[in-house]
Image (cartoon, rainbow, N blue to C red; front, top):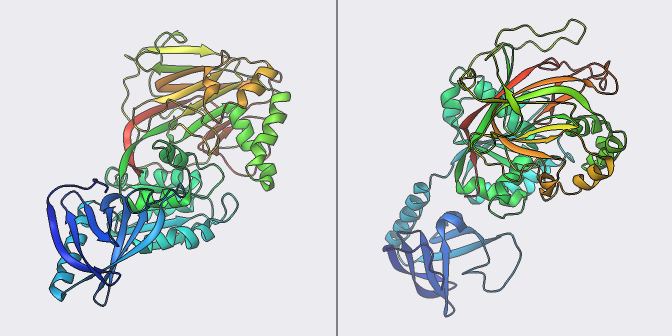
Length: 488
């Protein structure tokens, strides 16, 4: 018999199970135990019980059961939804069981009211169906009240987060790829009450192309990246802190929780959009094109290294914040003008920091906040959710064949062991992007969390205005600023 959820009994009574009277016990440690057909059964309320309901004189306990205790034989990797029926022998016993079960579940700090943002356009455009088929039944099993809104356009989720009455909800859930999560973070941090707003927990259910955040959270405890597992993590109510990076250029800010890329990775991510009909295969297909027609970019990076990484690069200095500096260029498309309010970014003492510098040309610059960039790209294997640092993956030069081999290691993170890759952690970062080494009339793309933050001359054609210009920008990290629902 499983011994989890031990402690002194909160309630012990005789109940009917399948027409047979048996002893049932709820312990102070959250263990629910009984016998059935001569076999000892147990549930761990915190990990396995979703919720319960009363039907007449019976209590229906809805659970997600893993392969232990109740599951007597090996089975599927994911927990299975099961319902167990207890029938207390008196009305007073029924009331007492319901009271004690509810009190214990309430003590776990689980969300009771959620706002669900569903992106029907992301990935394979099946998020709405995923919600109805997989997410909704689990939320109903857990007695979670929810309001559903489908995103209608880009920045819709950001606008919702900016104006949302947060007192009505215990969390926001994004049934999408990573894009809706990023919009929600930016919306919360642009509110006047950002310091309270950013504390609301955010859940991510993978229903897009990338799903880097959901993969990172679930993989951190060895769980597969599925809608089922992600929804269970939200229902259970466990939370963890998440670093937020502030990307600053002049008075314009963008808040990032995933990554920033310039060079090869950004080109693949953004320019492959024209092959979106291929699904996730577009990334592999376009990566081959970019490797065999490799671009290098002139430019410079400066950074404040984390402890242990001080030997990388050459000594440098930074003049501090360049807030308010007009770095736009009339010959480029004008950056989108945004009224700034709310969170202004962390305070960093730039002048007393020990800065290091590396000059280009570069094949790729990649900054990561979490380990996985997508479900099959382990970009930064040593990244932590709230260590206060960004992981920098840099390629200054790499032969094409070596690069091709290196790209095949992205699914397990072994690419960082290549002699052509520099991998370190940084506290602050400044990017000064330049033109392509083979053509000074053309620039590159700066990709932040899957969106085009800035683009230089001669890049792919787009009617959308970018938030920033293709020029110097600064990145700082605020440790553990946001909160996400996590498996443990």
